[in-house]
Structures are given as structure tokens and as C-alpha cells.
Amino acid sequence: MPMTPPSPLLQGLQGLALRLHQASSAQDWAAVGAADAALAELLRGLRPEGLATAERGALNNLRLLHGQVRADCERELEALRSTLNQMQERRTAWSAYAESQDWSPETP
Image (cartoon, rainbow, N blue to C red; front, side):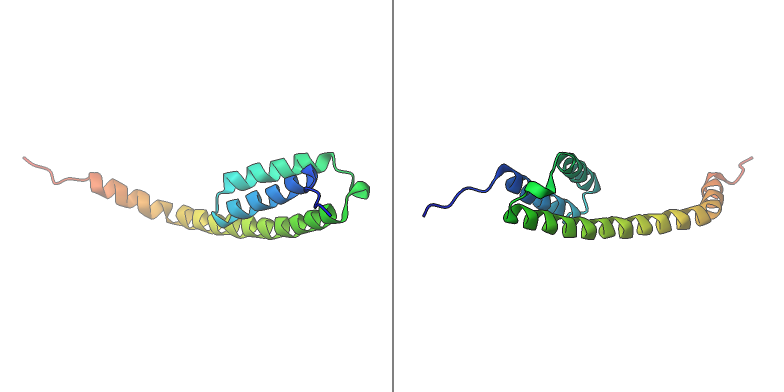
């Protein structure tokens, strides 16, 4: 019995999962955003009641992966927030140092 090729929807779900995983692994946040937007577009027209078993499985896998990637994004956001807070706290010292570098001994 010949195997039927995967449906376009199944291919799309699997392709988005791969894109999302690769972007997150590379910490390519712009690519994560693009994959997330593509996923939102795909889900907008999706009718869950009409999905085949393989499509439901792929959708569930994508849902789990999306949750993991979202947690990755939250951790990255918190790390950036911490870095920015440290920079803000040290801004005065950096400014004073930069100004002191402009000082030069007066010459007669």
C-alpha cells in the first residue's frame, strides 16, 4: 500500500516548529519573532475539529515548543533588563570617568 504524502498543513506545522527551534537555539530573536508571526497567521485560519491525527500531534508538539521558546525569551528579557539596570546604576561613574579623561594638565 503506497504511503500518502503529508498534508500541506502538516508540512507547515512541522516547518514552523523547525524554524522556531532553530531560531531559538541560535538566539536569533528577530527570527523567533518572524516564526511566531507566521505561526499566528497559520493558526488564524485553522479549524481544530477538522485536523487529522498527525496534524493534531504536530500542532500539540508546536504548542509545547512555543511554550519553551517563550520561556527562553522571558529569560533573555530578564537578562537584558538586569544588564540595563546595571548600566543605569553605573552611568554616573562612567560619566565622571569620561569627563576626567578630557582633563589635561595646563601648560603655560
